[in-house]
Each structure stands twice: as C-alpha cells, then as structure tokens.
Image (cartoon, rainbow, N blue to C red; front, top):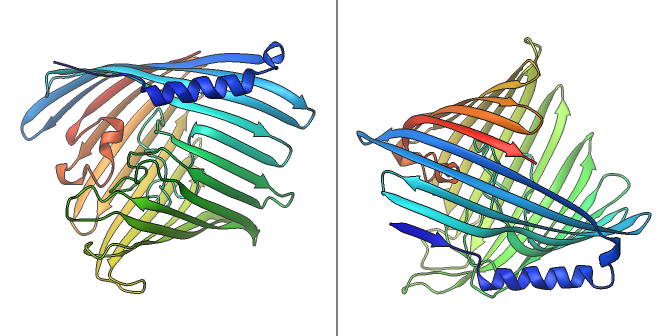
Length: 379
C-alpha cells in the first residue's frame, strides 16, 4: 500500500510569484547558492509486545538567490523542498511525500528585516518545555531540527541598544501550529507582535497573537483566540529564564476558556573534562474558567545533559517527568560530526500515554522503547 503526497497547486503559485517578483530586472546581478541535506535512518522499537521497524530517507535541497542593493541593504529569496520516503512494518505501508519546506522573500537593511512567504517563526528562551511554542514544532530530540513553516509577512526592527520589535501577519495556514489543538479558520488572517528590550544585563520581552479558530465539530462554532506572553533571560553565574503565557478562547462550549502556561529554566556548564552542559526546566499548565482561576493543572519537569568528547563526538541525554502520571521517559544519543556528514545513534524509552504530550511523533520515534541510527550528509 502506498501513500503519496506532492506539492499543492497553491505552493507552486507562491513559488512562481516570488521568483518573478525577485528576478524582475535583476537576474544578471544574482548570487546563487545551492545546498542540501540528505539523511537516512532506521528505527527499531517495541511497544505492546510488538516489534516495529521504520526505515526511510529524506532530502532537503535549498536554493538561495541574493541581490545586493546598496552597501547596507540586500534582497534574497530562499526556497527548499522536503522530499522523503519511509516504510513502516507496523502498517506495512510505504509513504512518499514531496512538500514545499521553505519559500521566503527577504529584504534587509542595517536595522530592519522583512520576510514574506513560507518561513520559520520561533522565539523565547526555553529549550525543552516551551510555553512560547506558537508557530513551530521544533523538538530538542530531533537531530535534524525540522519544523513546518507558516505563510506569513514578518517585519523585524533592531535598535542600536539591542532592543527589537517584531510584527507579523499570517494567512493561508489551515493546519495546526505549535501546541494548537484546533487549526485556524481557513483563509482568515492572524496577527501578532513581539517587543524585546534589554533589562538588567538581560532581556525582557512581551508577545501577543490573535486568530480565529476552526471548531471542527458540528456542535461548536468558530471562535476568537487571544494570547499574551512575557519572557526573559539573564546570565547571573548561571543562565536563568522564564516564559509565561495567558490564552483566552471565546467559546462557551469549551470546558475552560482560559489557559496559562509557565516555564522556568536554568543552565550551567560544569568544569568537568571538556565541559558538561546542564539544562533544567519545569512547565506548569493551568486550565480555568476565568483569567485568575485555577481549576486543573499539570506539571512536567525536564533536563538535558551535553558533553563534547574530543573534536568530533558529542554525548547527550534528555529526560522528562510527568508529576501527575508519575512517569519518566528519556532519550540518549551519541553523535559524531565531520565537515560534510554526521552519524547519530540513540536509545529511547517513552510511555505510550505520553507520546501526544511530548510530540514524540515529530521525530517519528513512536511509543515504547528502542533505538535509532541516522546518517546525514550536507553539501
């Protein structure tokens, strides 16, 4: 049985449009760069007393065209594809896909940057348990750090004192983003922004976003969702940071209209051998019927360890603990990196009930326990 998905007509139209806008009158001055990432992997896992194997390969070619306008300004366009094939013994199914991965037109000056198209938007200091995981699916356990992009117009201004302002508008994103449980209403714009400012040898930032949510159920109607957040990071012997978010969903049929998420974290590099880097984070999620209520909550703690051994090898470990379910799951890896290729071997153990909470499917490891071997080549 085969499952194939190819680039949609809308994505092709975006590609042609941005290429035409960029190359009009400037083709003879373009600087071209072609790069790519080729990876192959096999995963052997066991869950519910059954063994499963998934083997696959992925290629992400990237083409960048750049045009220097003045000594302090330039335009470029970046386009890349995501093509992969996998075979899963559990489903006895072969999956082949070719998707548009990135397509963005950028105009940059000394202090501004404007991007239009399919792009990655992420922010916030948290690394393992992110309250500000609004638009991406980056997983710290994913060696390739892959994430879907969003169709957006984003403007960024950087002041001379390191303060910066982001403004964005999203359109045409009909799939769930970040930690969203329900997608946005199709063909309806979303808006937001972020202001970050230096405070006491660190940074403090405020972020907001608003969108119309598709209820997807016959009994529920579409509703407005608003988010506001505050985050900061400081280096005081150890690195300290926090992220806190308040979300309101205007839907009376939902069990709770208010959601609050708060992450606190710290990191430090111990002088052991080549340096042992330790990260600790804790995430609290609260659901309530009013903004200052506290009806239901959940708590997850996480840590990561990273140790470089020599010039080419790095050992790492990531662990999570759910305080409500009293379950622990972990990920161990060894990676050897050269100039143009790398090899990664990892072991994992994930309780089946926790896979959705931790976005385990983003790395295709699945539930249960097992091992993965991956080779990656860059050009």
